[in-house]
Amino acid sequence: MASGFEMRVGDAEREAAASELREHYASGRLTLDELNERLDKAFAAKTRADLNVLMTDLPSARPGWAAAGARPGAPAGIGSSGAGGSGAPQGGPARAAGAILVTLVVMGALLFVGTLGVFGIGTGRPFGIVLILAALALLRRLIFGRRTPARGPRGCRRW
Image 1 (spheres, rainbow, N blue to C red):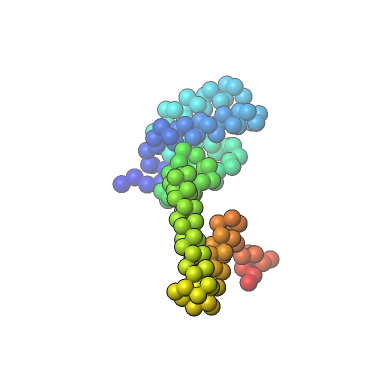
Image 2 (cartoon, one colour):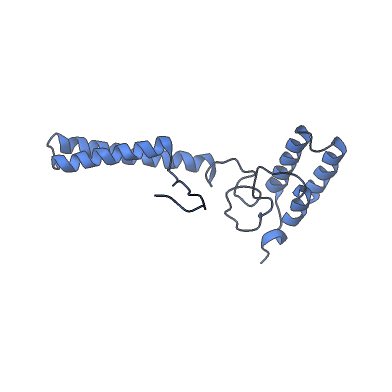
């Protein structure tokens, strides 16, 4: 089984490479002749190595070109599940919308049961308060995302 740069590429990966080449032309890094030559090579590429050769002398916003074959589930570049590194979670916008929907449903259930507990129906008052706080914590995470720990002077985590 082929892996890494020997892996064959599809139309989506060729188009992603062509799109990035067009961005470099628009930024003034490539002349029109260089762009046309590289686009011809991009659409004729058969492996990831063929596409990587086109990008080696250009800066890339996507870290995936150099490590395209490192692992199939890489977050960006031609090794990802999308055509480019759009920043969306793997699986695209539908998966992100599904995750938000599930979070909202769980948060609503926690608020509902917590409210019932606070007003004396079903559970005890302290348990209801804990459930409401958990729902608010989910809402905070949905709005602000995950917190990443601060890094110390040598890249160590500070807690």
